[in-house]
Image 1 (cartoon, rainbow, N blue to C red):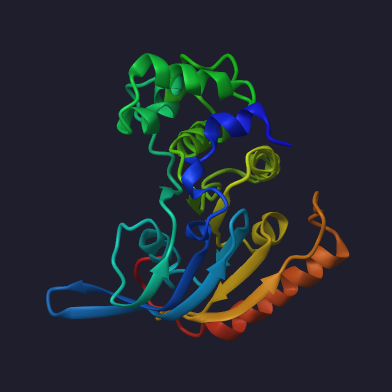
Image 2: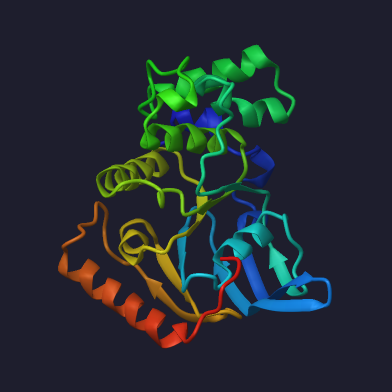
Length: 267
């Protein structure tokens, strides 16, 4: 059903249902360069992602997962290969809330950057605070919020950007185990109400299986895709379910097969 929440946050109509929402990477290569030194990061990564899908990307530390998101968001340019991607927004692991703004103004920041007036931007953000479990904290400064609440504000800011593709880089990696589990459940519920196409980078294979429609496993740097696993398990999923555990083991086996010796470097 087309909800009021969807109507307030949906991308511009011209993009909805169009081929532009499909994400496709073909033979993407990228190296970091410092002076004359070159560090190969991605070595021919190819993958596709359909509109409305949540794709989790896992791989060894330093293999290039974050670099992949930066390429999707246009923050970096590939050395070779092609990237077909709608407008995307990046949510990094750190919430990057501005300490001098309250929660409401932090959430409205994406709209303000897009040129929306302050009163209107605050009004649109305020409408969603209760639906995202933030009611009553509009005037709180970031230091007054728990880690989970800070991440909700950051996620709301990401949603309000109106981009068709959300790139989430370890969004819950800095949270304690209990809060992390709560935020995983919250993200599933939020995306059920407000569908988006999502690429989620995570080091946690259990998180990938709980949240994703598919899991892509990258090798050690320079990275390539070593496995793509379909998560054909109905939601809500269970951390201790037999099928969830079996799929997690398959992902771990693929990680072990593709890990090798990974050197230090950007993730």
